[in-house]
Amino acid sequence: MLAGATALLLVVGTGPISYIRKYRFYTLGTVTNLAIQAVMLVGALIFVLGIDLIKEALWDTRYRVNKLEYLTIVSIMIVMTVWDFVFGVLFGIVASCEST
Image (cartoon, rainbow, N blue to C red; front, side, top):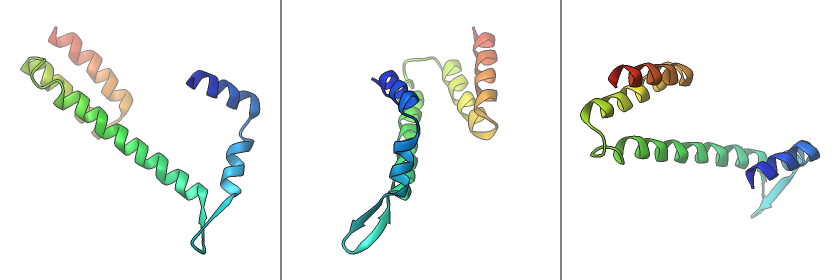
């Protein structure tokens, strides 16, 4: 379904997205710009996705892996937070190869 929507957007173009940006929504006598609501919605979705990924990485694996593997997971998350996602992936590859 996502691939179909992406292909449809590729064929149609970004015109419908720019239409949403220009459209104004009237609620209770005030004008609310839908573009601002869309940015807030995307930010909230990214925030919820991040919380879900942290829960899945830390909470769900706490008794399923040994302490060294759990330390590797935590250190990968710290490297990704402090430096960059790509450095975290590279660090994860090196750390997982060293721990086995």
